[in-house]
Image 1 (cartoon, rainbow, N blue to C red):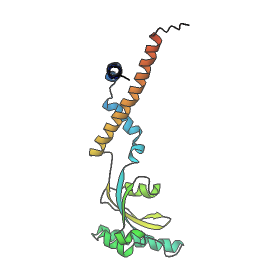
Image 2 (image 1 turned 45 degrees about the vertical axis):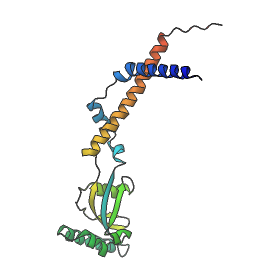
Image 3 (image 1 turned 180 degrees about the vertical axis):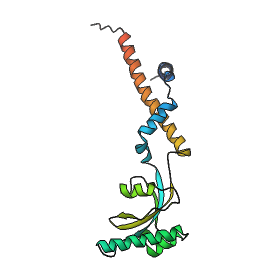
Image 4 (image 1 turned 90 degrees about the horizontal axis):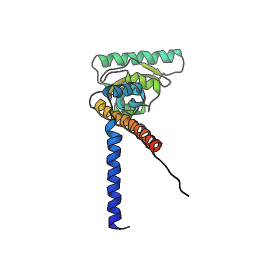
Length: 195
């Protein structure tokens, strides 16, 4: 390849890019209503990647019968009442929780949505940050959850997601518009085959 042929290819490429931008990209717009509609239709999928931070106290039943489960529920209720009264969650978790996280004050850490079982996660995410759950029964026992923090589709996170949605919708419209434009060019083209 010569330097002149490289320059010519570069000029041709720039002309094509300019033509595509004028015929395709400049004719596409993404409205706020389209972004909002996409957000509402895909909210569950978009929230999947968001994280939350929670703590819990686990009270397992002493025996696997109705009396054991009832005793665990009553103990969980009493612990929750102490927490509502101002007791330190971390300290109560260390003393009473029968879970590996007890030594860390019941800290479950930062979790991505979908890491815990759906029913446990729903119980945690129904809370507002700083709020305590009522005793929640799982196959392990009764839990008292406290949501420390959670990312949501609001504030800075919402602005970031809306920009990502804008890019997704633009790319979809761009691809469709480019395909239609290329079909239009092919239909208008006169192709002559000489043998």
